[in-house]
Length: 406
Image (cartoon, rainbow, N blue to C red; front, side, top):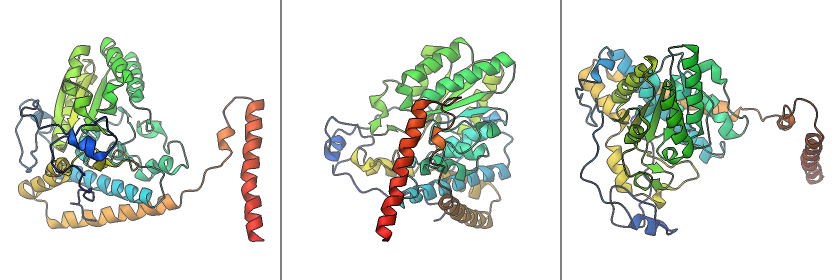
């Protein structure tokens, strides 16, 4: 696998012949009926912050340039390395799930710039509350990527100590982590610390009541929190236009704090906008909503089939905006980055893939009876009964194995 591979194999074409730019979910159950309701492209889109175009050209922005003005060529190469290795890890995890080594996987393919840019904007003392797809942010926070896989393999309930990296465990319940982040941010404010909090969520989560409550509390209490919404256009099979009549970042206005839309495939833009929002929070100016306008190149999870509800043409259009390709173009044209750097990174990415495979396959099975511990401080009759029933169930497999041996 080369570092330029945008992941993924191209999905097979939808049964509906004619294509549009954005599909929509129809009442029918077949891919043909869903695809037939595809939305026509709109002429006007809200403005978004962009510092690096899909062609790899630097765009000047008076408001946000100061937040990346001092970035060096080495730091740019570091951002590129982050995105490449994150994509390589993600691709390996997807392959492991297909081989039966993981029960499920939620790919970040296409969202690397949003995650790496925002993740690198945080300070060590900031606290991050992710969903279940923030593998790139975890990388930036220093979490070993192999620790992300234990839960998806079913051998633990998280895999890392959240307080070691100020990176909370993955949250499967949609949107609830925004309330956790708001509460934590309110606590930071009461402590008088100048650190901040980042809460990640997707466009689908923006329709959840928990997110609205988090917006309300954070605004009223002026909490130092950045709500970072990765709008990847699809909440599983539900397109964004089925969730909101206004751009997501504009929702912040109704709660009394600013919102901004950034090109989510522009790592420099995401870095600058997130730094700006975090500095606002540190100065006591309250929350900010950042909408990173990006695209989920793969399936929602490995149990999903996106060819049933969206067109290949849509994906192809977004492939031209690939976050890794545009930064490579910029590095090659505007810095002294040579082919040796890319070759070394290719070797490093392959080594990472091998390590991930080896670690996952060597993960020990959990203690089957650990689930019964720490349910109550003292003994409990019902737990004891359930433990005994489970022990008998486990023992039944030994009896079957013994019979088969005979």
